[in-house]
Amino acid sequence: MLKEILKEIHDSNYISKANIARSLDMPEELIEDAFTQLIRMGYIEEDDGAMDCSVGCGNCPYANHCNKVPVNTIIITEKGKRLLNI
Image (cartoon, rainbow, N blue to C red):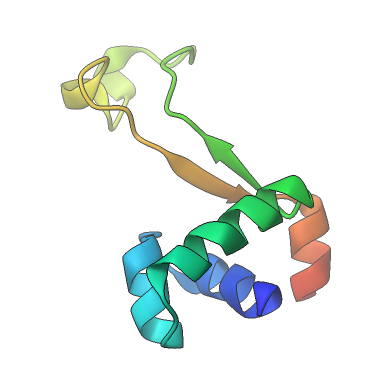
């Protein structure tokens, strides 16, 4: 199940736990728990959207939302990529 969810994360343009739950026909709570497990096991990392980057705001795609709405992103780690053979 975790590998299926990791594959959905990889294949998604926009990562939404609700969309993954619908796609895999699973409860959203189960997807939430799976994300927690994938993070704990080191297959994904979550970026809380903290604005500590060195990119100038004029070049940043999130400039209009800077310090207003945090943008959380999920990154598949090297360990996760090895599991998916990518």
